[in-house]
Image (cartoon, rainbow, N blue to C red; front, side, top):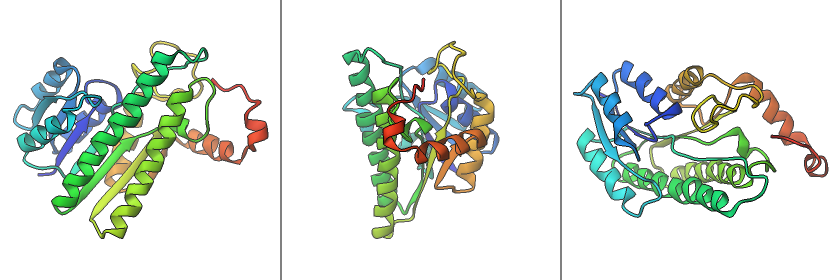
Length: 241
């Protein structure tokens, strides 16, 4: 039976992906800062869902991850869905620093722990949600777009390192556009807003297909391809929110 650890399973895409993998027969270890939503997942299949409170910004997060892996009995897939982000036109320092702490430090801590575990246990699959926001620097959300670019580059670097070390570790970088999750709140102004369930299904498809990078959906694949071709002298004059 395949075993997956999901960080950030309390809501949004992490929660939806957990439900889909449960339907496909996986044994789950689900983690987040809040235990109540995790317990609701556990009620769906108590014999196949294990829970653990993990705050990725905490120094004891990797120890808690080890405990969860022990509960599950191993880890074939590590799915990372934890993250925060806000628009910050005033560059309020608390927002910027909290975003960097969670999306940068927390991401590095947990992805690194999963990588070391798989390196020591014969391999596995690491999948993480970054974002199309990492394609270019977005003035409306500086720390968010910067940390998402960091995440994509970090996964790419680990993929190269795993090949250099001949480790049997697969990586999938999942880059959705704007998704109607609690991260965006109730604001409907975001363009090409994606449905959470549809995005989760495409993510599971990308994981099962072992895609290296998957931009979700086709509209955002076209959009980000165009973004990459815009010269910096023009990009800085655009108003993108």
